[in-house]
Length: 277
Image 1 (cartoon, rainbow, N blue to C red):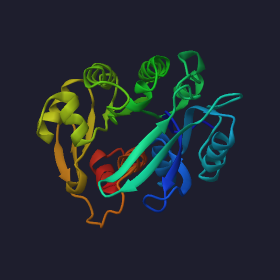
Image 2: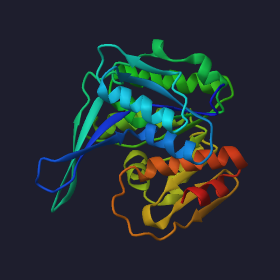
Image 3: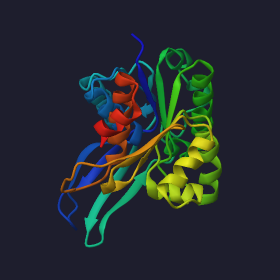
Image 4: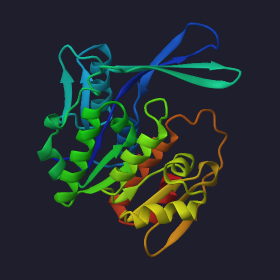
């Protein structure tokens, strides 16, 4: 059965330091679009994943995870001889730091020829992010082709900029992500990223930038302030529920998944914003 939401991107195995300054790590699962897929599935949506992982311990663990979460893996490649990307999180006085081992991974070697075009055409929403465009030229081209294919077939496209300056310089990130955003129906940037990518400072000015570029909905996350949800006709600040944050890693990904699931269920971006916040 076709998935309503397809999340296309890089899955990363995570090793998170359990005791500061000690070489003890707990294995977990990361990758922005995988996190989004899980959040959407837990919110009741029909979800599938697109991309590639290595046929190794970590890639097979991802397949087990997705299947346990009720996520369709029929369009996800398990590459024999390939490697799944990894990252390591260490904790210290200055906060947490990330180190990545993703060069040459199965996700980085994904090409436009690997796209499951039929699955994309049958979806209702295709979700992608800037990270997959940053990890390799072939993956970047595949993201653009997937977005164009979805748009041509009337499938809504959502795009999270997810800026990572360790992967590419700001000028290149601006060029690629701003061009990609012009193919997006739903813009899902974070405030800090958007300020760097658009050159605009206020939430309203950033929303204007993406709406003027062609997006129909902008859901701009504002951290503890919630989110600005904007359409060409209306915009509202949706306050967040106050919580004591322990670790904000993946928070934006979870927002994306919850937002898309609720928007698909109700057709109301403001209700989706309230649910996701």
